[in-house]
Image (cartoon, rainbow, N blue to C red; front, top):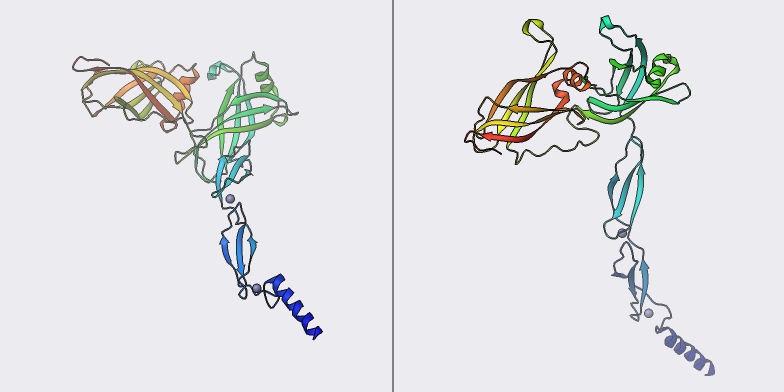
Length: 350
Ligand SMILES: [Zn+2]
Ligand SMILES: [Zn+2]
């Protein structure tokens, strides 16, 4: 009898202590009572089928959902950066993007010295360099802008000159030879003289690309956007360029460049004359020269255009900007016309 009482006591104690007659709960599979997020753990609640006692277990955090964005484009010199930001919280981290692979490889393959020869029209010593230009990009290249460093055998820079390649298109994966780039030597400049007098085999060359213009019109560097046509009263386009050689028979004592202009009157009044400035730029958007240019002698009817085809200028062969305009193809030039004054047929002026 005593034994029984003791057993009863133990069972009773057990019931009191655990709240469950069997001493062991039987929990269900649990339900999520708090969804985890990427910053906080969740909760799962299990309920005992015998006594309804519950217990809570934590649920691991959800992974971050990262959105990827290039926050700094890599250049040829500097690494870029890619930033990953969680779209649910602000957690973020960055990864670096390696320096851009050179899209072009420029190699100098030869140097030749042409001594001054007045009979041949050479008024100073000239160095001619031969280049091999390889296009490693996936687009046809129309022009390359860059700087050429010329160093001595010890890597010491003698001279740095700007050096652009235009006038040739370079097919994808192919290289072209350019041998018509010369440099006039100024005999009063030590660096020029040193470059002239040093053998090709004792020179090192380094070409640094600053911009590439592709055949599809895109470029490595975005060019300063040209003003929108909207709101302009007169829109001038250059439709053709013609180079005229010296011809004494017709009284042309210097070469001449002539352009065919299309002048569009974007106003509702007929225009009698336009005064303005034409800026001629190279393929990379760099100004070559500006000159005053007026359109008169023909009425430009409201909302229509007129062609002016006898306007040009004489080339001074001693002026680099003139020579550059003369020797550059029309498709490698860019034009900007800035109107300074408009005279209408009704006598009003703007
Ligand atoms: Zn229970
Ligand atoms: Zn997150």
